[in-house]
Image: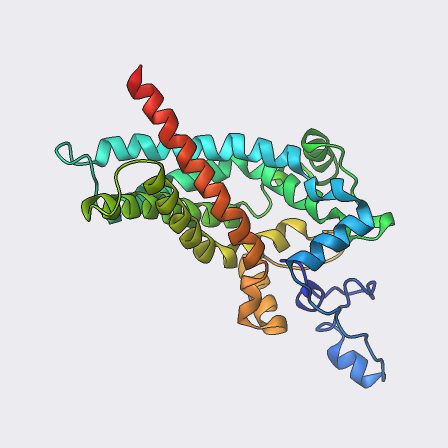
Length: 293
């Protein structure tokens, strides 16, 4: 969904397939030569996209890139959660065991940025594996696994391709971690201070779902740009569809409007909400186990 309408936002210098019409690049040329480009395909929602993926590539396609997702979470989540807890321990008031919101945000920014840099290769592989089904059969990358994806990218595009879009990944992770972890701690403290609920499963689920919503709102624009930059196909001797994050953002807004940066928000919150709940509920249980031992 984040890649829908990208054709108009990422023009190329050669005539492309109907899946990627270069509307912007050929706007004046088409008018001059009386060329009529086909309109972009209608945008569809979450269920329609899911059904189309199943019809075209089978139900297993919904799990495309799952090996890359697992590796990404293993590298990214463990790094950021561990660093955040270390900083939280150092910066918390020893009497109340709490720290100011600004300190929480700062800790989240630092932890998220470092975690994203570590997990970026798996992130690029995940984006490409999930987007492969959009391409014509002749252009698909057909990565077998995250290891195969990283190996092929390193050989054909150079080792630096594994960190393509890393600035976006870092920015997104900083936003997600700062908004997610800081807001979780803040919501949890508010619930306990106002005595709305006791420190238990109900509090953890409520605070984590609210944190997931905040993280989704804060990160979706960067996520859309990150997905497009990571997925772009750079051919030898040809200009890249995007010159960078800012260029991608400007082309996307110009071609599709500002709300294009919130494409895929429903699946984002549908993923971010349950994921954040599972993340923090599990984390709280692990902390409890360690305290017991």
